Image (cartoon, rainbow, N blue to C red; front, top):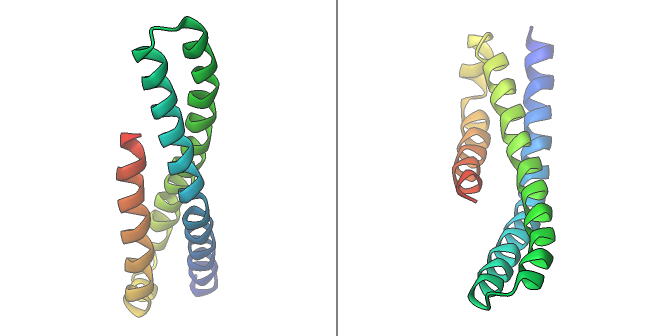
Length: 111
């Protein structure tokens, strides 16, 4: 199972790196959608609200992709828990990845 666990950890690291790369654009899309929708509502403009909905859909899609990556990382973590020896041997690496995506998942879930 060591080969499988090592491969799972490699997948986790790659997915976490992808999450790190995509979290900036996701945050930017979220902030743009929020700003545009607030402005449209403040202006009481149905046309602006309609246009802002596209930004909201785009932001939702982008954030959902990041949250899906977090969900996959949870599944990989669950798989690693079956190999106690591997967990002990690679504890620091695993904690680093889990801490990062756990924090990002909480943040993005609020969006």
